[in-house]
Length: 291
Image (cartoon, rainbow, N blue to C red; front, side, top):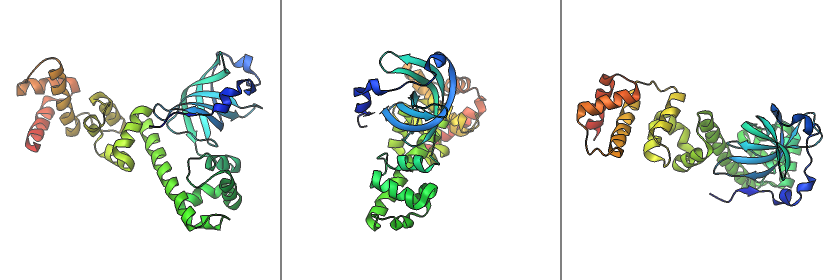
């Protein structure tokens, strides 16, 4: 993991940070806002914690929003819900308990989004040229008709391929992070999952979410079970029973036991999982045969 991203100029020029027009009226209130991300002041790729400046409707100046979001880029629209608080150094800000990013739809937003530095081969000049050529259709062209990028002055075959490859990489990470976040996975865990499985993460987790507690450090049975339930895995599925048996054995070992009689193991696992012992017995037989 690299160092957290920081916009150092923001911290150097803290006095230049203006507050919302109705700052005094907002203090202590809970509110949902929507707007466009003007800049990212700070972001931790490990935790997903971000400090960003957001231009919201009805406010002349951007406001500061802090919270966690699986993916966020300048130019995107976001919806955030939280409480207005005052930071002793940086003034009033929305401390968000939820943040959701939305791909930009306006020309200005798309240009800022492309110029954010996340897409290799695209800086401010190239971003402006792409948007000038394709308008609000720019992101669709990059994803679906990338050959047309060569219509943009300054983009040849090699640069077009670089842009396309970078777009695919970033979109893959974005889709995976949003998928995991929607099923209750925090950013730190999501990054570990992505590092373990790469682009296959969503497919592999849908097939068997319990593999997470075997293959990804920091994710135990309870976390994998929560993800499985969110994905609609039946509580009495053999997949869950087999993973639950391993979890039960590990729990017994942590309690100091060296072995467990078969019937005791079945009873413990059935109670822990809240399922019929016959399902557990069948899963145990399958596990023994597998080994």
